[in-house]
Length: 185
Ligand code: 5GP
Image (cartoon, rainbow, N blue to C red; front, side, top):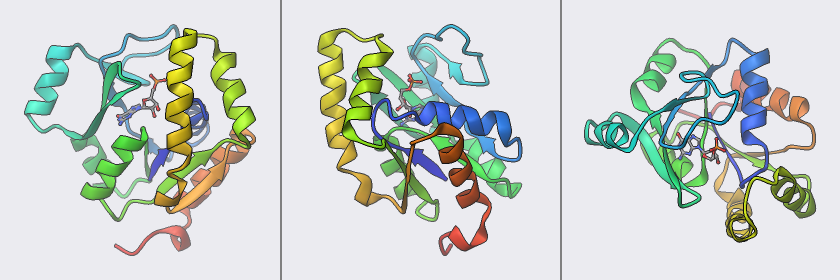
């Protein structure tokens, strides 16, 4: 399953909830060139790599998809761990951005694509501004990106409204484990 959605909708928080409460779900650990934030654990939240290492992953075609997010750092999904999880029949979750989701759709069209939506545009703006970690210019860039990203909901198989993290995460896990929601292979 691929979980995508606009900037600051809370994809990471929903994924954290799944990581904590649903050990039966395998979560992909992305490689990224951005610096770790306080509390982030190498190998658990991300594999933190430098540009040279990221170039090496690309050259070896080790990434299932990759993208430059917010024009800053590179992020990518290591391919082999995803294949292993699928071979083991584990429910597998990729929390990635929209550009990455499109690449996975090319590579693995049988995946279920879920779009996480904010309860409203106002809530999304509040979340973007509330986080307070971006400069005004960067906030504008992110809002513009979010506007474009919100319009992409129709590309997805399902959408889930992130009105409450636990509720949205449970809906997501339910979609993953209930065979009636799987797509035809
Ligand atoms: P953050 O830096 O806040 O952890 O993540 C920023 C954005 O990068 C989020 O939208 C997240 O979904 C996206 N992202 C995280 N890992 C990957 C990845 O492996 N590939 C892609 N394409 N996007 C990712």
